[in-house]
Length: 64
Ligand SMILES: [Zn+2]
Image 1 (cartoon, rainbow, N blue to C red):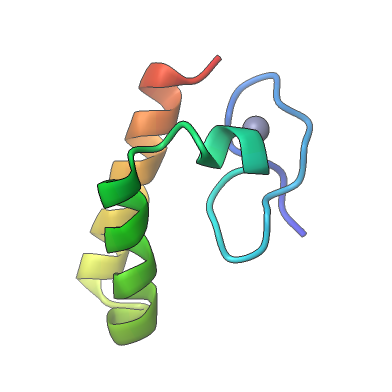
Image 2: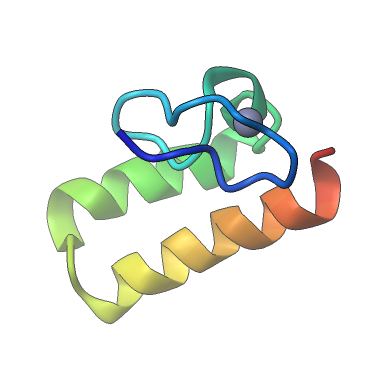
């Protein structure tokens, strides 16, 4: 289990997401859907890395 990447958040990541349940819920649905789709069809590829980055950027910008 990995910790949620959001600063000062000490929750664990929820399942196959990139953040804890409450922070994951702050990511727009289209970004989450895109991430899940890429995880299924293109895990480990540059598009996967890009999708992870997009989610992380969103979390560092918006969540606190
Ligand atoms: Zn969190």
